Image (tube, rainbow, N blue to C red; front, side, top):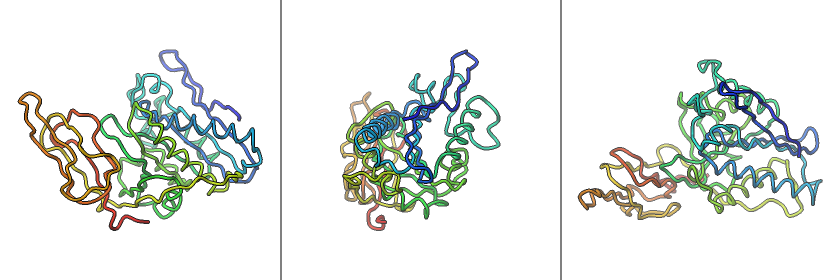
Length: 319
């Protein structure tokens, strides 16, 4: 394993920013895959996954060094200041590190760091996996999110990741400053993983995604272990018309009655919105369609229009 600092710089407060990469190098000329985590400092699932992957590859190098055919680069904590503060945005600058790319973002310190990181990924990767967790309000099943512009190239790779769901999005201007979009535009296939919830680590979920990443490395020819690739599940593939979002009609506390990952029937109860001041149930949220409950509100405090759940229809949703 080789450790490299790709962006050392001092902030206006005097503290250094260091983006560090761990590399496991096999034969030259074979595929190079990079894993990226910690763009948002409150998304800890990806940071922990990188730890697990480094552990796995170190053990593999010790017991079966010939199994590493290609190169794996791991960027486990690319926004260290935000991780230290456990905040989504970078402290001091209040900048979203996944919205800093492109000509419109100027030359701030976060923008410079992101450009250095993008250059490093472009120069050393044939494929990238960008690991994210959800926000404070919603818990997500393991899913790969793909912009329609890149779906033909990315769906075959996403099928190898042990995800529960592949969600294809329409193109939108909001994605143009992200790492996933810019890497894919540079013709480096990049999978954006969304799993779990921020400020938490779910061991079982991390096991699932780790097995998917190891399977993907086998599929790409980076690994060829004696035990072979882990088995992976077949994910559901959905497009915008096959995803139904349930939103709150009232403010209050949301109490879930369904389970994330549950296969629902139309009319099944998702949960209740209660008014704790009056001791009343003001809303019963129900599934509008049958399907897979892949997003469920975790934060109880809600307001009118807040997302409570997302349901994917299975009828047309198989790859």
